[in-house]
Image (cartoon, rainbow, N blue to C red; front, side, top):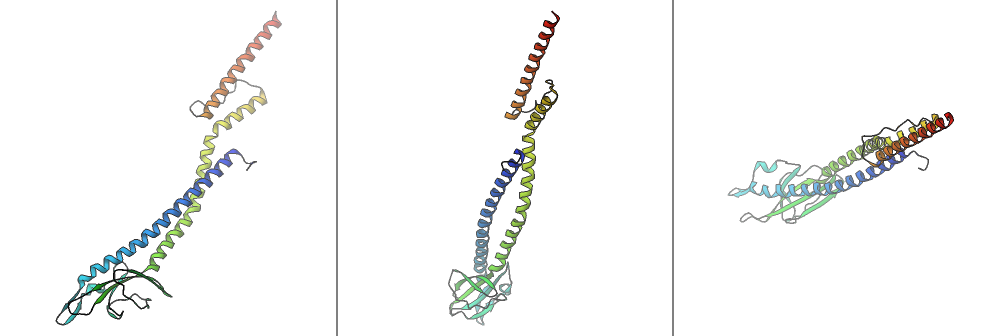
Length: 240
């Protein structure tokens, strides 16, 4: 970087800093977002299972399961199992071929060749019936796929943000170094033709670079006046 122009150095440093900041921020947001997303899936599963208890009743004819119990809402499948894990009623998601081991009020995670699943069940005691378990099953794989899509989008967007930050950094550094550029050009012009009447001419700013420019212009005015006085003095002496 030693031979790079100052503008390029500033742009490079600005881009690297902003890219690292964005990467760290996105990493933290995705990590927290993944946890919150999976937690929300678990909460929806628990809520759906608790609500389904009202859809199971018993009368003289036996166990009655309301037709709404068979509906799949938010990807959650409901079913009724015996205490030993034998299936009675409800629906099982396609690809779920694992044996359910009821654990009252606990979230279980099972995984097979078809995917990963959350399982939540509640013990239900209906009069003289043996204890039953109302179970909810939902796919974790779909939730994780959603998270992967979000991560993929972030990976695609990140280079675009880096390019945008680099372009913005170049524009900002160019505007910031504009007084230095004009100051350099003025000095070169004075060196070339010896015209001390030239000025940098930056008067609208208040930062250090503009102050430097104005100081340089005042110095040029003083030098021009000094040379004019010397020139006039030399001319007077020659005349005398």
